[in-house]
Image (cartoon, rainbow, N blue to C red):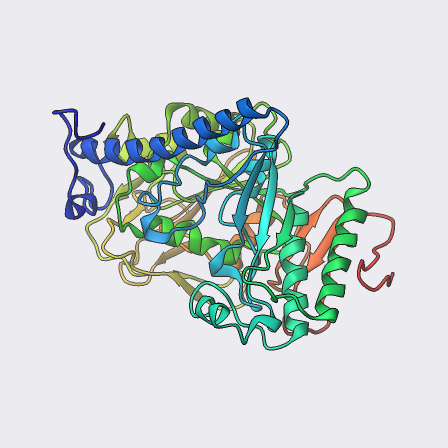
Length: 466
């Protein structure tokens, strides 16, 4: 269908890796944008058509699929053809969305997350099903498990490690009001009585949590933009560094973070009032209705953080003025070399000492603050230009950071300034909803928790302690 149109041709791999604006596509790259969009639409169309056929055959069947992995795939997000999560999530003939746990966040020292935006699934009225398939301790002698442990899976050294990992993955899902399965991928993965007992206890904990009214309580939302991925080109590190690699730090800021896509902002049931800090990591080419949604959030006094080149592409064309119109901050492209971002200790860095973060984004065009009179929260280590600024409004703020991933010691002060309740200050993975608080600490120690609940008691679900 694509090559049958004489006005179209297949772009070469080299062409896909470069755009009119460096790694970002412009008007001269329309053929590439159309190419990616065509491929992705074929996948979404196929899912919708097949789900409709199944429902037509048996209307009583629950239909589910694995799709919409917009938080992963690194530099090859467009190539993955996973860019229309919102179409799958909103498809009336699909009831369940599945995803394996994020392969990049499985280590015991890490945080847990999905490969897709879990809150988006819930907002669209679907059940989110988390596949917990990491190789547990009893599988270590399995040669197939050993193959997986060389890349996507993490090896556990004991039954206890497998139990703690299982509790962390399930807690992450409970916080998002989803559910899960334990995937015995090749048989025998859970052949251990102690491990089986622990997994049944996780199931009982879920039953208790879901036996009474329960609701999400995240005050920070991470909003990925599917449309922009059509414009950032293949092998562009923007998605890798500002979306996928950002998930680790977001899991450590001491509060719950929800994950959605920009189209969810347009839903009538989107909980706009609950969120106090909106993070837009990749909003390079937002659709007109998304620009209007951002303007509406600003008018409502919401605090917002933008990364890299927010709003640069408008109606298919790039201009520095487009970024100021979206963010209220004067930004422009720079010809200077961009290195790390250096941020002093203090108001926007609660680490206690000056730190660097980010780094050169593989030859991507740098963006800097155009007006040196803007607040200079952090500067480039190499070019000394403003690479982070926070502009206060009468209510809320607009913040911009040139590069990612942004560390938790920068995100946490931004969340505090936005009025977000910080439950834990030490960077531990934390998951919470209206009935639950979960912490994961792979080293142990005495920890301080600042609960948002003014009365009542906390009961440890696995020991019964109060």
